[in-house]
Length: 335
Image (cartoon, rainbow, N blue to C red; front, side, top):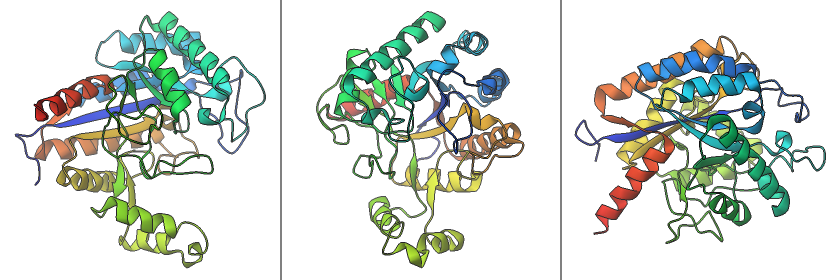
């Protein structure tokens, strides 16, 4: 059943607030550029004019830059956003070796290294912004038992490292829930009864409602021996099957709105849009906004919000605010 104006839909925008570089090159360590953060104060005003309460997952490179940290303090002082933590292990001390594609995923690092990097990040965020970060996202996605237990020990109570229907050479999120859940601390891709940390995935799906079925089909045709058929590309162009992301760097407003309609019809209580601060700069890393990126993304976000608002009541929340409301609703449903 479609939710109308009387049934608010929680809307989150989370922004990985990080350095910029050419993803085809080496991972930067101490010499990083964070020029994109200069665009965030005006972008934040744009978001505020739409009613959004963004969550900025700030990484070490941004927090360690005097100028970038000052920009983020200006934004945080408005008290209409949340500062969370974002761990990019390649530019987050202490450094143990040159970064590789494998070691860029925290789940591939020894737990002692992750612990030290997380401690350094949390301490710097507290020092620079006078907040104890309560929300977190891994760089390049993915989470396992060792990382989620480190988060609990660090005082994090909302994680957003699950990327539904995504996999790479090092991990898979295919079996994880698409809706918010309490993750198992021994296997965070599964639900459990623990109440220490909550998982709030970003919104990803397809232009067909049976996501699990179509994900199986999409995944099968993405690799040999079926990839030669180019089924996924043909299905995309004919709109037979499209994988859609609630992300202005990856999907057009039309596809984002299509995804929103699909998941609302499926009964999703939350829409979680996500993006990277570096995507505001013109670059080749974004599939869509590589020219006039700031204007493109600003307009895309506005189009999605304004169009949805004509039909639905949107409850704009930071990720921690959303988690608290979703947990309360679940408790009320169970009593």
